[in-house]
Length: 122
Image (tube, helix red, strand yellow):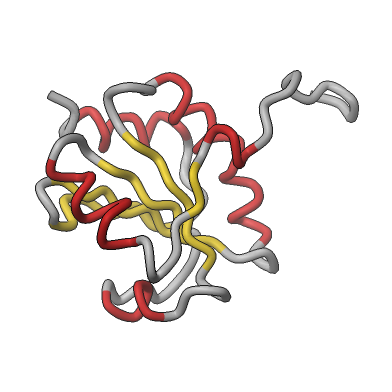
């Protein structure tokens, strides 16, 4: 996609909710008791994170209703990444039933993310 070929009217915020240390318990832990939640741990300075964003958005769009996808900025929220031993970003954690069910580290291909998610989508 060249410049100017952005998706019409679909901003990231519209598509993927941002969560914080404060909202994590309700938006992720509690929410994962009804459907799997994938958390994208990222930071603004992280180039691979920006490279992964369109992939994560696509996965969120294609699995809407089956999985909830959220983002957590590790610079603004230090508590959650520490609690879940996030050592490098981008890291995707899949929560199910209030617990971490899977982890994907690095800017991986979409197929790899989908393969992991399919294990958790009933």
